Length: 343
Image 1: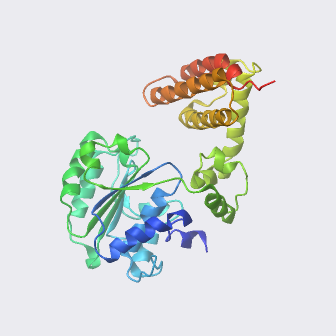
Image 2: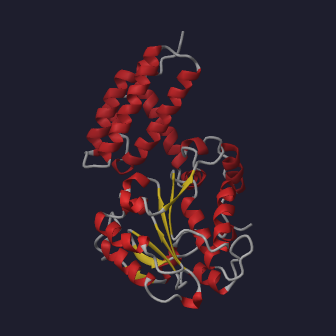
Image 3: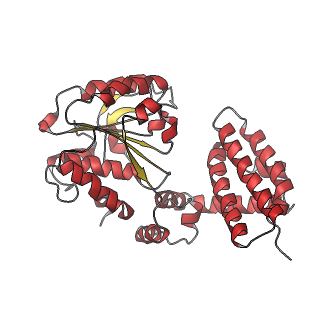
């Protein structure tokens, strides 16, 4: 199956959820608003797009056919009944690997000189107005809101009434890695659809089909196969091996903590902290399995908590360099104990 053809189908580990929701589509019982949540890189967005294609397809049979009028328009990003709302604005939804065709229909976009970090109320209002119009072809209307946790207070409130009382035949799919970041009033009005990380064997089998056979790729991607593919495509695996060596060197006293902090690109601090939390948690699991000394476990547990605290500060206004310096100074003190090997 070609990469483009695969986009019309769910990923292998999503089949059970796919059968559940497509059955509701066929019974015309699919909820009007759904909140798709789960970790990064496990395929939530992929699933949402394939489901919208299935909803709109005119010749569906198990999956969207990929060649009817509706599917061809989705492939071009020009289907009048499908839209995506995100930080780039309110655009046409496209089933393409890179999403470039979503520029096929531009309903609203922020000013080019203003790169937004949230989903604005103007974009939400544009989507609401579009959903209020009559449907083309008499089919359903679908909108993907992603990442939904970037809705600001105003845009979330603007969408609330539409989610409470959606126009007939309308389906809103909100995709997020951080459902708790959404207002409770919004979460409570959406049907929650949770996605777990896939079984490692299933993930590796799928990755092998995509040409990725690096044994470490899935671990470095925190168990997320789509993230593993992305890391392999842009040297991300090599970078994470360097990070592991950096942390090990600081713990062993081979690397100055301030120099180690300077080696972490300030633009990748958030990603580095996500990786560090996973790496340290893996080390802690290893200690527990070996019945390591209490002081080792306690030192590593303290460091996991410190990284978690650093993640929260990084999401605010903390200065990246100072944040990493503080973390590595702490690791220099705890790491030697945490990673000490039994004699």
